[in-house]
Length: 284
Ligand code: KIV
Image (cartoon, rainbow, N blue to C red; front, top):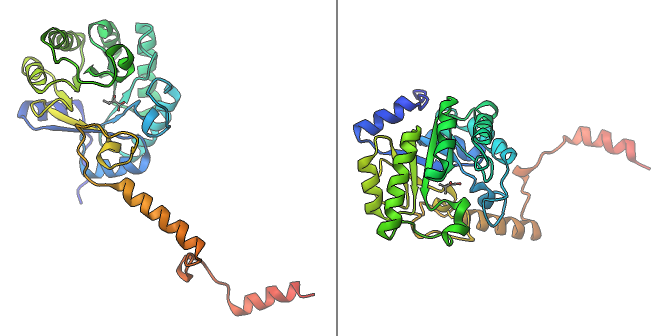
């Protein structure tokens, strides 16, 4: 088997210019990262959605930089070839350009990420510019931006009205001008996504925003039924790993209870001679 080549910015832009779709998934742990690397995924996002999918919070807001660094390190160990994006958690870039650069730098220095992602449009353009000027590739995130879910009125499609859609189109231009290498559009209507993609000269990635972007993102846990609390309408389920795991766990509980586990292949024996010698020492 030939060793996979490391995905770089030129690799991504070659795909972009040749019209070949870019693949992107979220990932938070080492074993999943090994599978995603083997499957040939281009870009992997260590999303702050790990606050919900891995840590059991109700939102992404409690996630810290230290949480993100620990998970990003594990993903990098499992997926050395992918373009790795560290997702900047809540209040690690909003306060100032300096906080944005410092925390983006941690993803690069401590977790060997290739880039970072931050949420927000024109109001975050100076943070984007600061990070990019510090030599760190950065992805923008527009549409439904979960860190602002409260201000946006919940987890809902953004840009259904022309006024709000125009703002998203302009925000995309602002982020591109600020130096973003790519923009993720989450839950915007398909024709708004197409308009932004046509006007941009960087890859636009869709999460539930239709087929006309330059690439697609799915949340890994949605793809395999691993987050039973909630299944977004736009997510495609490629297999129900959650069900397989639950059935296996129920079977384990039943087998231990009825003593069919462990079977001889699940443990080790000692020879009669050695056991006799051992038992001899403890005979009364
Ligand atoms: O944290 C995350 O996984 C994300 C996606 C929802 C795009 O930011």
